[in-house]
Image 1 (tube, rainbow, N blue to C red):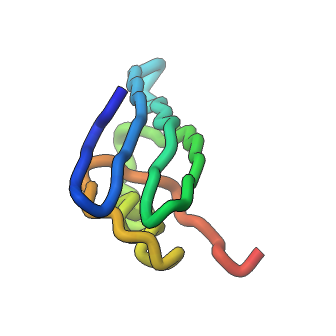
Image 2: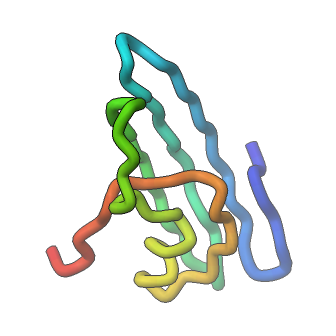
Image 3: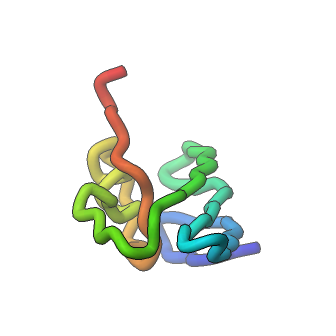
Length: 84
């Protein structure tokens, strides 16, 4: 399903979220087409609802580190170590 489309990219993705025993559990999976390249991703997010976590970063921050134009910022990912 097309989540977002501009002149520079197309994002196809699917999300789901649930709350179980005081935990937030979610996933986001899909792929981004940008400048002739395709970037696949799958992310699972789990955290206690009572704990705010400033280490969660937006998808746009992750893709910006990869030098990929990606303006969506509504969903959050776990921190990503790009040096490994």
